[in-house]
Image (cartoon, rainbow, N blue to C red):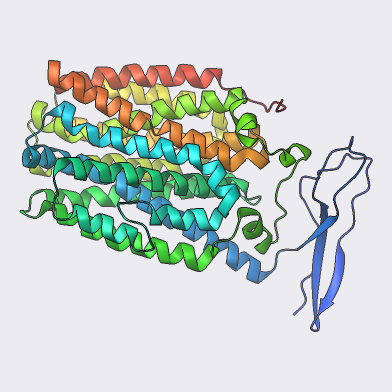
Length: 467
């Protein structure tokens, strides 16, 4: 079978006046393959260059491999969404079973955050040491309370019988560590893709929303049963399938090796040879601004999805089925991440975040000031639609303004540090609710959304050289 390479449209690492090694054609076992040669280290000022590396042009087999890799990343994000969507509908039942108040039950979010931030800090070293594929798989292995390939099985099996509250909460910390590594790997890998990266990032996070949409539907049913904690047995099955898929697709390989399998040359720069990646990463001003922005964004998302059920039950007279409102929020999140892609392209991704943030604030004011159960439920869903595109937009922006050789580590830190918001804001909500009542939820959300818009205005729109 012949594969013709007629035109190559890729961002060249060479200046316009520097010749680029032409495509080479080799024959292997009677088949003609086209190769594109690239230099491992770019830069016009360099006096010496690394040997050229050849990457095969895209073939049907490579495209199939790319689809499988993308599917594996999507399923990982589905599990992350499923995990995040579980807590809200179960929260009132957890309080009832363990006889804890708002502040104590909020420790669930705090311990989940501790694990997530720990994973973010360890991600750079682990990925360099063991490779992208290995870390992605062992993120599952270390997700809960035991080591080994069946760790998540044992973890969810431990949570299923509703153990003592300290053990139950500790599971969230270990879970956060594993999900942090997977979140960084999946986002970094998709952001590194050359073909339709923005669209794929939107789809990736829409799948996250699909997981967060599905989970409350199941969790709401379990919250009304005697064995409410058996919900974690369903999570167990999804975690097992995720482990199998990651092993089958990535086979413990590094990210550059996985990219080479689909005919894509990894992004390199002369500064990528530096061993001190931590120093390079933490010297980036744009990184910290985006990390703080995501901290507030994730905090708003998890606080709204987690506490809205309690808010509706106590202040709007909602019944046991109020958990479906949480599903409506995450359903809107899913819809927004795909349905608003054309808006992002039309008005520009940077301006779109300002637009979505202002509209979301307006709808939160409706939820706060209009005492209607149905109207509030509908408004919550539309808030999800508007908040949905923001996270993938930030990840796309990170891929544009941050150095490509640091991208996975940077995204890992943004996601991990941002996940602190999923503990800070929900815990703050619980602490305020224990003093003044759950009515404090909406004023807190409105103020945080306003601060989120302010932070986005500070995020630079162009890349800077790493010192």
